[in-house]
Image (cartoon, rainbow, N blue to C red; front, side):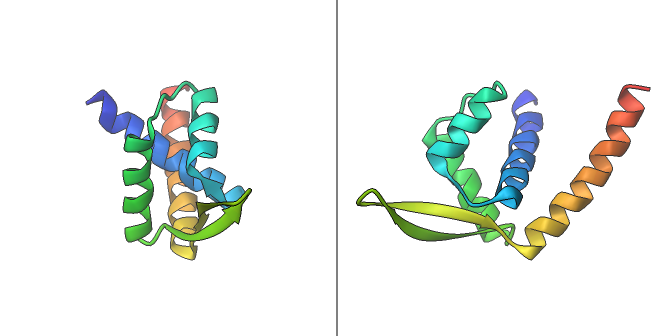
Length: 98
């Protein structure tokens, strides 16, 4: 059960950071580690791929320091989903901490 809740938080983090600018695997793993999440590439990449299939993110390959890196950007659907999630999260936080 705990993992299901954490997965939702991770997906929100991914949308949030993708809304700020392009994201990539190792960068996301490092960012999420600062928030206490310990993700392996084997955990993160299926989440990113699923979110891309759902139309929340889109990816492209970029050449960085002689290596190709898959970079993800938020889509319009992802932005709408993030906005809706933020509204619901504000309401929930208000109830939890009032």
